[in-house]
Amino acid sequence: MIPKIRIREIKKLDLEEGYLIDGFPSVGFSNAIATESMIHTSQFELEGVIDSESFPPISIIKDGKPNFPTRIFVNEKLKVGIFLSYLTLDQSLHRITAKTMLSWAKKHKIKLIVSCVAIKSPNEDEEMLGIGSTESARTKVKETGLKVLEHGTVPGIPGVLLNEGSISNQDVIVIIVHTDGEGPDFKSSAKLCMAMSKLIPEASCDIPSLQKEAEKAEIMIKEAEEESKYLKDSMYR
Image (cartoon, rainbow, N blue to C red; front, side):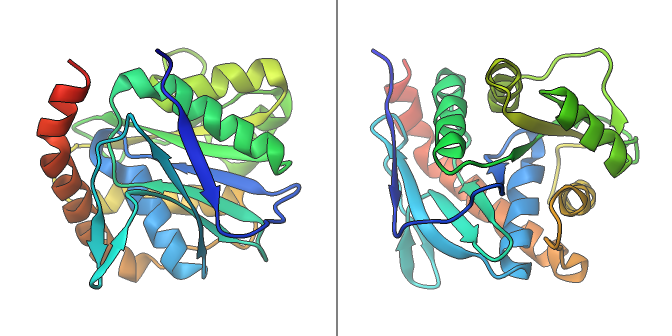
């Protein structure tokens, strides 16, 4: 049975010709932390939630308030939407999650989807790379100053976004960042946030506060992972 993912929006949104950022965590949580920082820096508002019977049933408590673990934040002035998640999804959900993201982007006439893959590496200072789903996306990668990935593999949600974007003519850019995969990924998150802000005009990152956000976000993601682990084991057996 194909899992279903539901998106519930709080209000009608105007994101035409705007941007969508994939904030689902991967290795090291760099993209989740970078997007969390961008949300706090650039005045994003909660505008929707993402839920599924296939997601572990869990509530994230922040400042005494319950939150869905996967939410949509929007800055309509910048025309940027962010899918932010504290869930590290089972790989059986990667394809449907990416397709849901693409469908939402099409509905809102998004021009560019930005995602990330973190690669474990002993040298975090290795150069970041980028790959685009279309010629226009690949041109934008070069204009941003990222080196283009010529050969390699992109797994998970970012890989599906690239493949589907290439045949639907949806611009998708995946940034490849190196991380040691241990501790709060402040360094790789800061680099990733800066790269995202180059791709998305006027979006910004508060680097001094990013370390604090990295520590808080990683704690929340790890808690969600730990609390839902036994649920996942039974759900995906």
